Image (tube, rainbow, N blue to C red; front, side):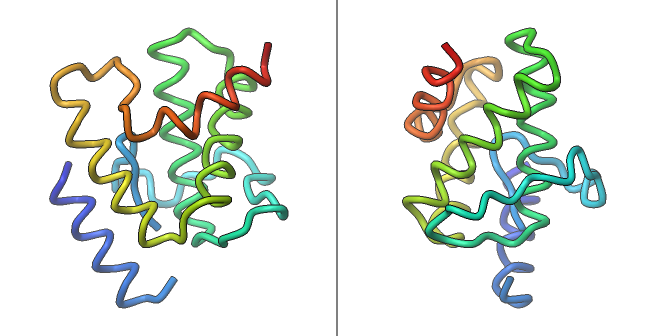
Length: 127
């Protein structure tokens, strides 16, 4: 998994444009879970493929771990990536995703502490 993220990071650097998270798998590169995944108010813009992959895998993970519906999970995941886009350029986000991926090896169902600051406001909004 870490190798996949590193390869993906290199691809992004060369392509100047995806990415990864603790939840991404390269085999889902063409997956399109939703058409409205880009939030216009974000301070930093990420490659649309990064946002699609993150949202797809994050949604899948939330459904598995928390039992959220697809709509609930998608909303939380879109919110979390937007939270990250408000604070970090894409390169820093990839570093955060890489650290998060390494931290879930001990407990794959736990929220990686590196991602918690981006999910907390999204989960509290949900009520």
